[in-house]
Image 1: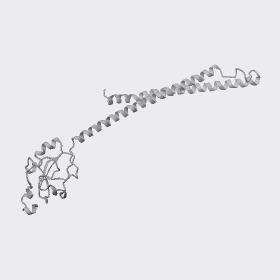
Image 2: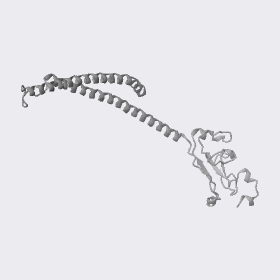
Image 3: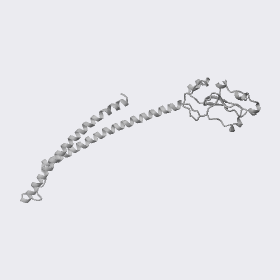
Image 4: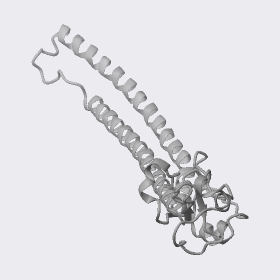
Length: 234
């Protein structure tokens, strides 16, 4: 039996167990009240007898008769024993509930750990799209040599990157993530930058522009390749 099933079975039995203990507590309390009532009456009667004996001179103040009877003392001891039984029974009920609370805490802790493990696994399986759109002001030193970048994606997205224009990225993507290329998708896989500093798109996926490896020399996208050289920049 699994821990949740065992805990549920024990929890379902808890109300009936507590009900029996509370019923026994009520019975003990009634018995204790009755014994106390009888003992009070007995003690009052014996005190009255002592007072009459003192008045008549049959009992002196230092007499050994100035004490409660054995019956009265026994009733008092019996009442103490019943009170002790009530305390023990109440402690048992408390410990029983406390044990179930501890088991519940352990169960909730285990659930929390399982959820955290699932979140960690989901986080490692999610794409890490950290590629931001490159600023042109900081790329001046990179002109003249080919610029490529590699974005991390899941295995499914990487496998489908051979046909990105028809691929629908069923991945959790930040709505503020910039898009690139003719396909207007976020960055993934290997990408190449157009060497035209005024290119409106700038970054392109290899597959979208028919590349399989990094091009040699300067490379211009199809939009910029047809522009006059003076518009493409030096």
